[in-house]
Image (cartoon, rainbow, N blue to C red; front, side, top):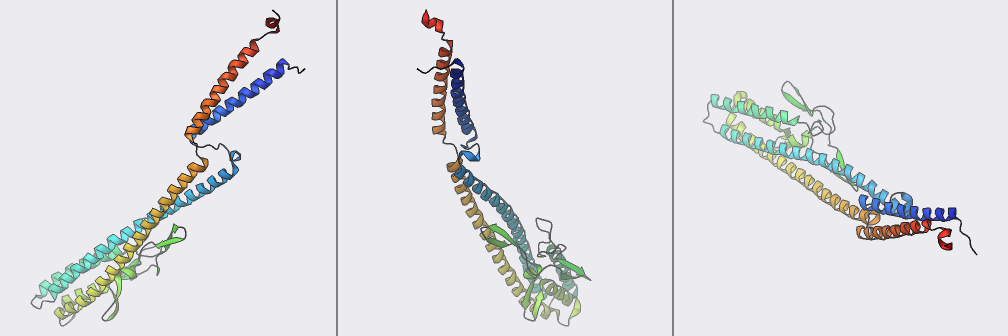
Length: 303
């Protein structure tokens, strides 16, 4: 015959009720947080996978930030290219006017003044800053892209612009250097827009015997310069598209990770609610049974 002491009965009952309460609390926490894992030991394999997914999310957030910076810099570059292209087109219009031999010296001087203004704007544009406050066209230099001595701009940046990572081994060059934008090879050899515009301005102010012919010669050089700018616009557009493609891929991968995180460590709400209801029913029944049994007395049986 097995004898159960009163203290043992209470101990076992308390343990059983405590286990049911802990199970109910865990289910409620899982429903509230959306995660079925309170600690790694609940499911070591799932916990390890979730840590891996979390690290991937962190790396993706960094890549997203870098891509946003690259996109911002390239957008600034693209806007600058449009301004430069418009400026060259305006210089071509002025050169066409100046190529007309009937212009007076005063009229040619007026054209030269506007050319000087355009050249000044281009020099200021060459020292535009990017989103981080660095020279947009200076490559990786810490200072300005161009220094100006006696009115002549000289490139002071690095030969290339740095590449920025987009994730999964993909990179993109964040911009253009000054020479890539302003330098080209004309009929007379290597030159740049600043020099071409300055030479045309000087010619129109009487620096050559035949200003009209100098203007006609400048038109051919400007055509080549504009073509070079158009080519760089295509390059920048391709880089922006490449960033967009990588951003779309990163977004899709992020969605897949979210789905896997929900599958590996997420709470099945339907199942959890059902289990919570069952646990609460058992807990209530156990509490009622314990209350009735603990109220029984041996004298009640003997009576």
